[in-house]
Amino acid sequence: MQFIVLDLEWNQPVSYQCSAYRKVGDRLLFEVIQFGAAKLNEKLEIVDEISVPVHPTHYLTIHPRVKRMTGLSNDVLCDAPDFVEGFAQFMDWCGDDCAFLTWGGDDVSVLQQNVDFFRVEKELPKMYDIQRLYAAAVGKNGQTALKTAMEALGVEVDEERTFHNAMHDAYYTAEVFRRLPEPMAVLKYEEHPRKLVHNERRSRFRITDTITSVAEAMQSEKLTAPVCPTCSKPTKLLTELVPQAPGKYVALSRCTQHGTMFVKIRFSQLPDGQKGMNLSVLPANRQNRAYVHTKELQYQLKRKRGDYDNVDIEDLSDVFSSNMPFEDA
Image (cartoon, rainbow, N blue to C red; front, side, top):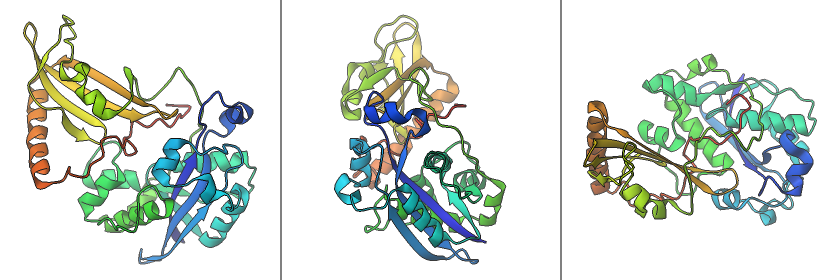
């Protein structure tokens, strides 16, 4: 059996009121526009790579965010095969005896929905989640961005391999996988597709505000003087808005009447292309205060080292607020 490290790029409706979405509905929420993969041999060496662009047949307009992130446009995809042909090319390259490895479960669900929608009869190989293996290996809970795992395991960024290109992301994922202490333990983490549905009333990311940009939000009075949850009066920041993870910030502020507050801010890219923000202000406890001070010291050190020189705070692609609209979310 060969391992195929798989990554997908997909398009989505520009609006859920558009005619294309009204026609297909929840049967096709995301349309695959690129297959990317790295093939590993028995020694887990990368022996081949592939990129198969796919011409969309339903969401013909490439969503501006998708175009910006992936570089895939109608001009790039106009001569590409449709999903059925592109998937057949990809599976021929994979071979008969293989298993798919992915970073997280989103690709698994999107691929299954496309296979079902386009009535492809070929059964998908078993799929396993490297992200869950990584979390177990490093003792973390929840999701980790691929870039974070790369940094932790010493996988260097290749200037010729841009992120959000399916083949390049598959390569980086394969390099992370190969560096894990027990890579074959990935077989413990089989991933199963989940049903995707659109529901305006439900989101895994609770939005308190829709924003134009992260930079503007960070300078707004709402974040520079967050309101006390008890007296509704502005508080004064005691620390910077300290990066906690991509799109996530923490801080301490002080209310003259009710003491120190723990401020949490979370930004996310929304399915319609806008950006959302969740702001939480709660009374701080000892652990909150210690945590923020630790993160602040780490941030100051990294900033002095230049780690944040080229960070684009508007890029929320690695924020795992995940707006993937799973039915059971």
